[in-house]
Image (cartoon, rainbow, N blue to C red):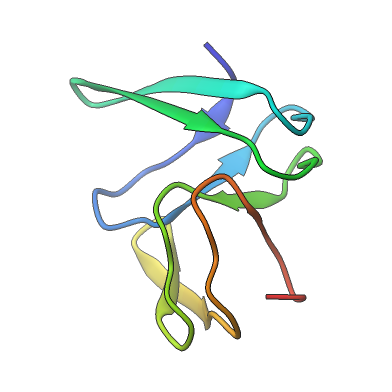
Amino acid sequence: MNKVKVLEKNDNVATALEDLKTGVIVKYNFRTEEMVIKILDDISYGHKFAIKDIKKNSPVIKYGEIIGKASKDIKTGEHVHIHN
């Protein structure tokens, strides 16, 4: 299991608790469900990645709070930062 943090059911991003390389398959448990996501970009420790597709202009939700708005479509596994 990779080290990622997701706190709330409506979160659409996770925080990487270790560096994740492009192509890595991330597996983590969220409550009783095992999640499996292929990482599409290198993700540095502490940075976010999408755990579901996020449409342009939709809220980015981390730890149950809206932290921004997507400036473009973001695919599951893609790095989420100020560029998008």
